[in-house]
Image 1: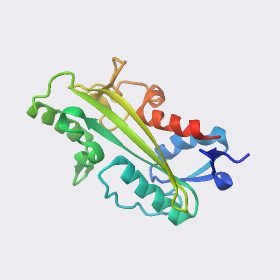
Image 2: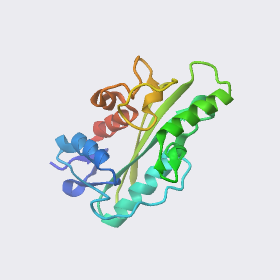
Image 3: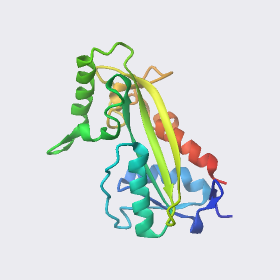
Length: 207
């Protein structure tokens, strides 16, 4: 039986994952495997990475998903995610990766230091609350798309703790836990994260 998503079939059981990140492809492929869905990355298809010009997670995820589905003729799934710090008005938000940009590539130790410096400058009271956010967009070649969002609330800590994970994980302590994402076992983090919550909604829609 062909899996469906909120009533719309994933024709041919093949889905393009709009990413050039091998690790992300493996994580998503593992999640969708029980549903008989074959996944292939935009990178493996030789598709270019579109410029992300929107100012929201859903906007940028839509750009990536629709670019991949138009180029491949297959349904495509994209995600966009980042850290929103309440006392910074939701920054870095969609610019989460940009805060780590240097002429030699991304350096998230600088991004984490900037986040804390901005909080100090703002004299933000404790707890310095924040959320990791993930938006998934599944798009079809006819222009239709569906959106699934996940959010993990927590707080920013300093100095960072742990060397697991990636990005801002060492300075983010999720609510209900005494470890940062950087201290957590990878699989434990993946089970509770913002991305896991978004994917849970997607999987719930698979019939």
